[in-house]
Image 1 (cartoon, helix red, strand yellow):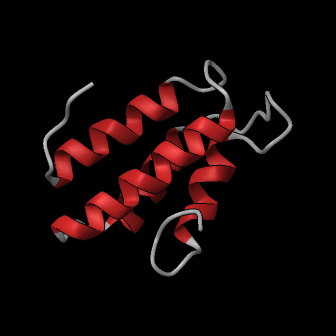
Image 2 (cartoon, rainbow, N blue to C red):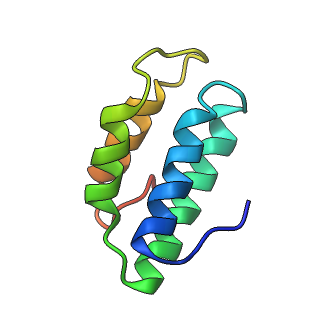
Image 3 (tube, rainbow, N blue to C red):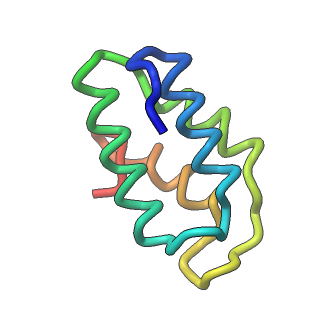
Length: 85
């Protein structure tokens, strides 16, 4: 789904990822999340605070054995630059 390349747009996209919890292969979600973080970096939007905000709203249930959505979002905040790899 298209989104604005703004703080609001990236937050909206993170919320969509969070709401989709468990409905897609978690590896695909992680690739999407990593690409989103890279895109935000390119536009100057700081993702760390957005990731923390959305992680606080996300499920802590690991439905696929690869970590909960909350855990994956929080893991992305620990990387420098923000992302999963």
